[in-house]
Image (cartoon, rainbow, N blue to C red; front, side, top):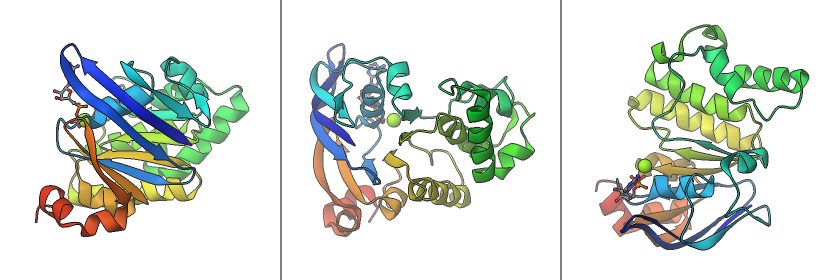
Length: 234
Ligand SMILES: Nc1ncnc2c1ncn2[C@@H]1O[C@H](COP(=O)(O)OP(=O)(O)O)[C@@H](O)[C@H]1O
Ligand SMILES: [Mg+2]
C-alpha cells in the first residue's frame, strides 16, 4: 500500500533521513520506532507531502506521490495525525471534526462519517460543544484521531499517539488504534514507546539517526537483545 524508496531529507545541512526504505502492506499496522531525534516525525511529514525529499520516491497504492501536495495526498485516503495532537484549541470538538471532513462530498457523507467517529469515541459525542483546548490530553488525542477519521482514510499515519499520556490512557489509545486497524484501516505508527507499539504492530522498523538499522515481525524484534536493551529499557 505504501512504498518508501531510499528517501533522504535534510534541514539545511542537517541530514535527518539518509536514504531510508520501508513498505506497509494493506491491512497492516507497521511501527517505526526510535529514540527522540531519530527522524520519525520527518518520515511522516515527508510521506504526507509536508516535506520534500532530496532523493528517493514514495508510492501509495502503486502511484507515485513524492511530489504531490498534502491536500492531494489526503484526498487519496492517506491521512496524517501529527505529533502533539494539534487540535484547534479555540474551536469546539464539532468544529474540529468539521475541519477534518473537507474531503466529504455531501452532507450525507459528512453525517455518516460523524456517526462513525462518535460511535468509536462516545466521549467526543458527549463533549461536541466543548472547546477542544479544555479537553484532557487523552481526549485531545482521541479528537485528533477522530478528526483524521472524518476523511475516511484508507491509511493513517500516527505520530506518537501515546506522548504525554498516563499509562491507562496509553493502553486505551493503543486499543483504539488496533480496533481502527481491524475495521480495515492500514496504519503506519511512529512511537518512542517501543513496547506498546511492538505489542500491537504486525511488523516494525527501527530508525536510528536517520537510518533503518533493524526490521522484521514485531514479535521477533521484541525478542532481539539489542532492541530490549536500547528501546525496551532492559
Ligand atoms: N525544522 C527543523 N529544522 C532543523 N532540524 C530539524 C527540524 N525538524 C527536525 N530536525 C532535526 O532532524 C532530526 C530528526 O527529527 P525528527 O524527525 O523530529 O525526529 P523524531 O520525530 O524521531 O524525534 C533531529 O536531529 C532534529 O533535530
Ligand atoms: Mg517526532
